Amino acid sequence: MYWLELLILTLYTGALSFIFVYSLSQLSLVYKFRKAKRNGRLNQSVALSADYDYPHVTVQLPVYNELYVVERLIDAVANFDWPKDKLEVQVLDDSNDETVDLIAEKVAEWQQKGIDIQQVRRPDRKGFKAGALQYGLTIAKGEFIPIFDADFVPEMDFLKQTIPHFDKDDKIGVVQTRWGHINENYSILTKLQAFGLNTHFFVEQNGRSQGGHFLNFNGTAGVWRKSCIADAGGWKADTLTEDLDLSYRAQLKGWQIFYTPNTVAPAELPAAMSAIKSQQYRWTKGAAETSRKLLPKVLKADLSFATKFHATFHLLNSAVFICIVLTAMLSVPVLFIRNLSDSWHLLMRISMIFLMGYVFLAIFYWNGFKEERKGFWKTLKEFVPQMLMLLAVFLGLSVHNAVAVFEGLIGKKSPFVRTPKFNITDKKGTWKGNKYFAKKINALTALEGLLGLYFLGGLGLAFYFQDFALLPFHLLLSLGFILVFYYSVQHTRNA
Image (tube, rainbow, N blue to C red; front, side, top):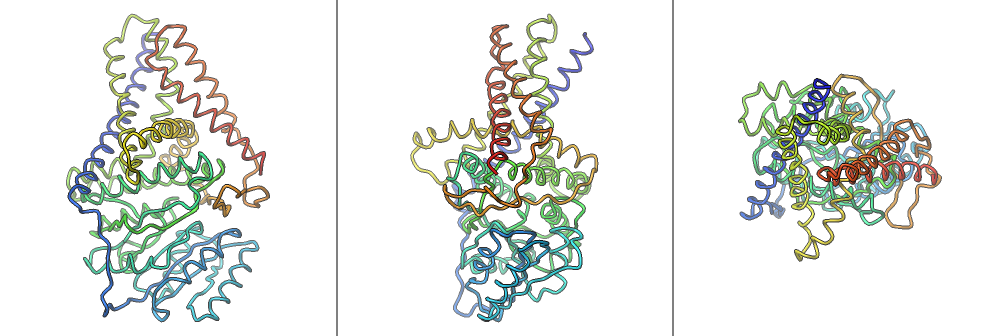
């Protein structure tokens, strides 16, 4: 029993320690963000001079079976306020359904209006999105390459708000913009996603940029310098996050990523739980694959300690889900050890201190949440319930994401899993009848339901032992797993 208790507490405290240090790295980014904001360094808009020499631009739209949103995307890009003789649009179409004909009709329509737009079809879908981008690059005319996923609807002035930033420094290889949300108020799930993404774009991206640390192209709504892509080795399909991979390879070669938070690219958030899960799977597994591939190179590179520190936790941020699963699953046995064992009192107190990591994460998200809001008390009133719900769903998705991370870390390969798009922009939108909706409930969903009951048992133990130290944690865990299970089943039934 002694060795079993030691193993449980060692794993539990070790996982909490990783979350704690990761949270400290996020707090550091909060500090850098707030300092830059106080000093007025975040407002970096551009104005074109009358004699501005417009460079040739090739807009790439990687598309695979986007029946419901592709016309919206093409229309938005074709309407860019940019000289027609300096604008090329590539619809990199890997589709194998009706989307092919839909794109052909839309492309022909804009060609008749004088837009240099082509439907680019490859012989096969090798390399998925990365393969499509690399294929298009070989025939691209432009010096700069803006990229948009199918769920985005960029504004007409997007190019005028981004391309001129490249003139500031020849080593700027990427200009990344902030994402907006056209359906944020559709449901509690879209509100929570917007909450999390806004913090990433307000705090994390700004903090890394202002601290001079590595940051990442977000896969869409950004512009690459074509020569930067070539110098960094081009797009690779050996990870599911080709954007993070190329970002780090470019920065290791000395290129810079310029982040401009004032330019916002609106996009549609996934509204169904299955779509959220597929997106989370790709992001978390891809990040783990990229860390496995590039973290050793980052640690060996001639970089400052601070940049290596932040790059390490940036690349390993998805590993937090493995630590969350460990602390969650072991927290119930820890309750027994706390109340039935006469040993380990010091280790118990230390582990409780490390639970502060979750408080630090709340501070991190608070700074992102309040950025576009006014009035402290009104903002706090909105923040508290949304933060608790975000934490609950974050915890509820932890097993699903931990499986993806584990697969990425051990090198298990899987195909690129696209996030289905629904063209839901208001509360009347629905995914009922959507041909891309996954209509199966898998074993992992059933496990999430069982884990909701497991952590309800943890709540019962708190009252049995009269030990309420872990009660808030178990309350969020039980709520999170039950919510994820409920939405997974309910959304599938309504498909």
